[in-house]
Length: 381
Image 1 (cartoon, one colour):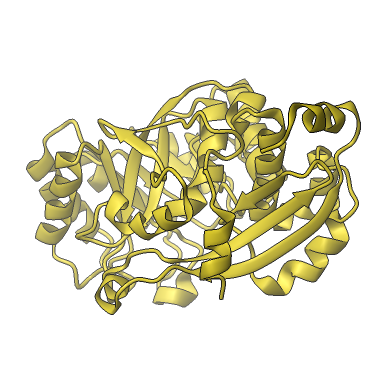
Image 2 (cartoon, helix red, strand yellow):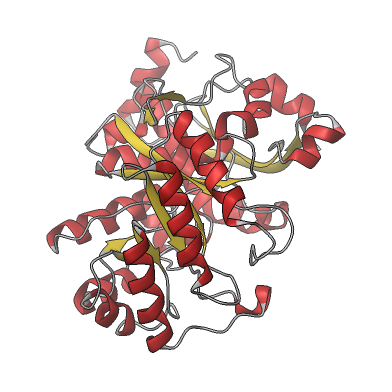
């Protein structure tokens, strides 16, 4: 714990980054738990400072990036986040999270408060991916409906699934079955993620296909359709959004603010979705949300899971977003079951508090995780 004198000395002048470590940890789980999908492996970032405070993130890049990160940050002013982003930190959003964690610990405040603190609760929707074929064609509509009901019973207000089936209209049929099972109050999101044809052999939809699918999803009661076209196509999503009532969303693949600016100018998406790590980190997401607010466009972060989610949540609470994605969950697990191993590196043994499907902001400083350094050393690979 930093003494009051040390804190005053730290705040009286620049706080320097004195060291950076990036390493892997693997928390012990049984073979059955690993096969079930429990998250137990993380890339840890540690940022040591001249104030005697260390910041942590569990969303780090691979260890191969450590030399470059050290060259960028060692000896530099901890608080100069903007400068670090301009110098290349945008590539390593998870490292930026660790800087903010150290800043918050020094200030004894959660990061979201330092950035404006727009809210302290956010609705969580859960993105589910079944093991097996990436396109999910092997998963029955009934299985998807059963997972939706499982989440709904646990209090979660929404679920997102992939719109990757070879016949894209099949996902509208899946939506209809899920809607029949859950009733009207449960949000059902669909993610086309049109940038991954090399993974599943899919082609980017033509506009006509996107329109047919969006209209079919709308009839079936879908909440939104995400990234139906190529990411560098700023016109087609805007055209589609003008022709259907469900929101067309996207943005997780953009780094920095430039592409988001193009989206806003072209009215590309009804909702912008910066990525909490990939877009550049917490400050970049805050900037994107401010830009979007000027255009009256909601901003909802693309999400992640377990210990990594801490940085995403700080940006979400800072911006006051309506939703936070929790991803990727492997059915039939619930999020709390999947991230349970991570509690072994925390003193309070609770990653996040969830009440009635809402994640509640932690009052702990920094990213809100009470990390046990000795546990990190124990589980370090």
